[in-house]
Image (cartoon, rainbow, N blue to C red):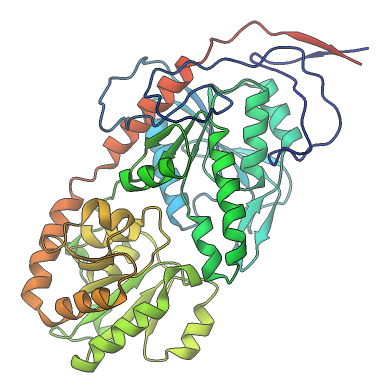
Length: 464
């Protein structure tokens, strides 16, 4: 017989081949009962998660309870993307990690290696947190991004040696799935975030038949965790209707000192061929099928018909960049920027178009608002949450392309309206402080961690 010591909360459980979260093979003996996770929240949903915590959980931003404890929480975050990669998930996680670290918590980010890094398993201590890098593979169609592989053995070893207080899963790929399974079996509380509407991508990539399967997978994945965070109340409502349990709001902030009208740069406008009185129509984002660029181009063509000197500026990179460069030689593809250079590009525009219908939030909307731009968008995600149409931007009913175009034409033709809405948008953005967002996330993680049974003495399990 082999005597094996496991860390506190450790539980060795059987993995079932039929379970979509299971990738390991071979029998594992379970020698202790599963944990009971007691939550004191609303109990409206009918289905149970493995954590026995049901229902739509109220947003901590609505119910401002003080933290239940001032002690440091050891938090491990699992993600397929992280800074310096540039996308909404990576940017949000970097903000959360820095904010939680500054509040005295211990953070470890577990992620696949990026292109420039060694392919081997490695651990490094960065400024804000420890990072554990695991093998990954390129995402089909997105060679600049990588997705993590299942890491049952690595995670089990890591968490058996040093057990975190809570695990947060930011992405729903194979690495995240393996992390949920290991955390459940080691009796570590685990939460997740709904960052990306992957099921909505199916039509954009001509795989509509996959949508029901992706929907079921995402629901199963998130309902396997103690709590799922979503960025807007509207998305929380839609997820709850679709059968997701234990939902809380984790909104987004915007850095209004970085994204500011004061960064407007006439030299950038001159490089675009735009004069002081000319119109620069701008969009920032990944150049990919799900971002609805055909509507951006159609809208700009209608604008240019009445404003011949207008220029379309697209800031970003992505799998469709070279194709759109060939199709649209009249557009300015500035490439990828970040930081102050990105902020200067926003502020140097006059009108922002946001045509995407697949966002869970859309950080670019609040960045454009903070930059003092009038935004034309659909009434969805961040635009639904923060734009009051006619007061600080213009929104169209979801899917109503003609109304979207009409709003853009109205903004293009009325300089005074653009300035008024842009100023109001800036005022709205000033209220979207990252500190408040991080405070709420800290409260939620602390509550969930402390609701879990306390750590026990190390157990010894015998297997043969």
